[in-house]
Image (cartoon, rainbow, N blue to C red; front, side, top):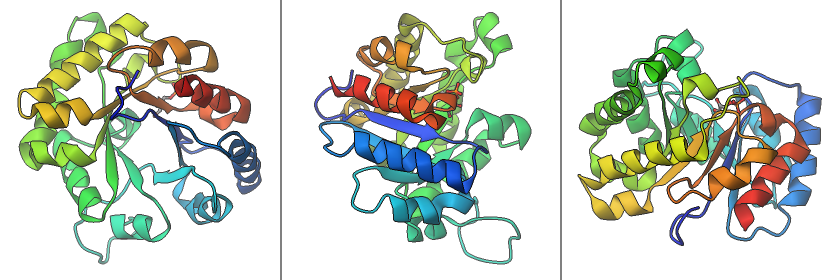
Length: 256
Ligand code: 13P
């Protein structure tokens, strides 16, 4: 679990799911859970189209709002279909997920593009949640560590270590996403420790304050043990974040 300077962050990535009505119900149930927040933060990342509505529903709650993606363009302009970081900020987002494996896999996002998104997110006043993680094939070939470090260094060389003082990293092994197959707490901890050590080589203070989330089939029944690991500071939750009771239970697991 997070050390004192690293408040646990439980983030729900809704992906491309739900309707406006589903979202309203989910938010109203979650608001009851987080009525009196202790030492953990809850973050919801709905699809773009629901951000405004969710922001309104979240008024006077302590739940944070984030987006799932943003344009890499540094300036506003004629970029059909894109959403600029300043627009996300404008509708109340404080975080944005970048480099999710689904974007790398289905939309061809490269490390370079992810690094650009990291920079424009911060320029807009958003905290990037940088997703990294190996595929099943890489995992089975024993390449987990080299892949994860490679993805980090690719961003680090562009943005510099100081940028990580206002960022979150999410380790999401691709083989664990939506599969019901979770990394064991030991496996996850090992990679999280490696991520922290990689940043530590550049700046130990930034590294010790950096929140590193685990993502990949986090559920109410495995959250507690995952969150109890030294370098796991929260979760990036997909499927289970769409069920109020499940997500609430994961959040509760982060509180004690
Ligand atoms: P699941 O929790 O559905 O495995 O998804 C994880 C994820 O991709 C969060 O970004």
